[in-house]
Image 1 (cartoon, rainbow, N blue to C red):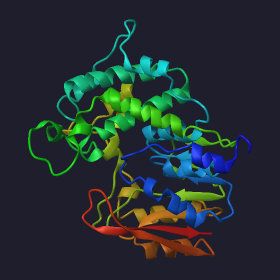
Image 2: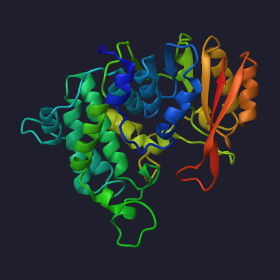
Image 3: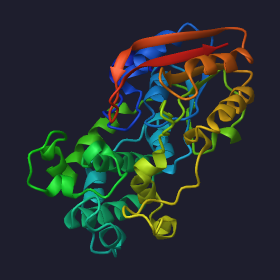
Image 4: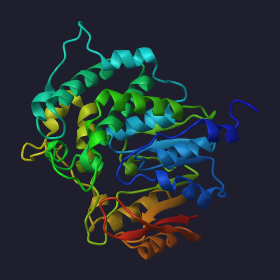
Length: 352
């Protein structure tokens, strides 16, 4: 068995747990089963999100480029996909999780986000840890440290989101029909150590040069055997998923020095000002798909979708047929999604 034995990679490298909205973690193996026999060695995960699909491609020995327009997501890609060897040590965790007398710690989160997402004590902790992480010199270790912080923040949030000011959901003494108060009240440091350990288990080399990019998808080159596409989702009611709205706090953390200038002063939950996205606009999304399919006209396209999305599956198939000789639709079992009252099927539409 060589260092880059693909069968061995499948058992030794594990993707971390995640509560990220829209994650394809539970579908990753099914997605692979639909495309594993296609002829491709280089792959672009164009809307990378959690990185779970890109990480699977890496485990299968492909040369992978992860991309996401959100800065914090691209850092996840750097930590879990591009990173071949760097792991967080006990000494790294000691540096990250403790105050240092020589460091002057700011209090931006404590002052700006009081009574919005976390307690005062937790906000003070975040100011310290964000400052310590930003001082880590090794770029891959820094990305790993950010990843563990992102996951720690998400797990302590009701609904795992930052879409509204609702710390009271955690703190009020009432009977609860959802959520896990024990998890919410678990100290940040405990969660952080757990996610750092999980991130370490995800790190490996597959012998290829894998990269993470932080670009608008329309700025990327047409240079891949296969392009995996998992765009933000618009429901049949016309409501789009805005990942900046859901996770603006994580974007702010990694843009800490500029955060104050990015905040929408009119929002109660201190979100980052949105520039809008065609992928969350039901009037523009179809044209965006057309443009995307044309842009990667030389690649096999694998589009993750939901059976109740806008535009409909038939519309996506018709657009692909205008660019591809062969289009195949794969359907998963029906599943109920978080924050949704309806059941829908995960669909993978492959054009080649």
